[in-house]
Image (cartoon, rainbow, N blue to C red; front, side, top):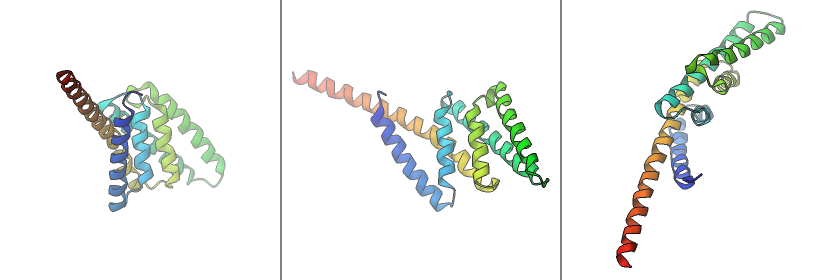
Length: 163
């Protein structure tokens, strides 16, 4: 990883800002970090990658909500198991649609929904902001890399002039 320092500075600074922002606005911090992680884990970059992270995470939230809601109508846990199996298959099959092609993103959204007992209002803001956080980290890293390269060029030119 050639630009490790720039990545570290960008990620560290923006993670600290996110943690403070989430605290002030009473958002679940770890959900934002999972949205951010989804951005970096999938293969698209830029705004397209941010949208891929958002859509796959949101689809998983939907499937998790469907499992929780559907299971609540039945006394027997067997229905919950069946809903889980059907939703799991659907999360894999939806990947044939290009905008939902990152299967782990769907599973992350689904797991968040389980962990938050289906509280959609608490899930959606930090999850979407987390994907934006990942995109922001990548943009900031590009700027830091560019700045570093300019500084190295200037230093090399000054060294050449001195010799």
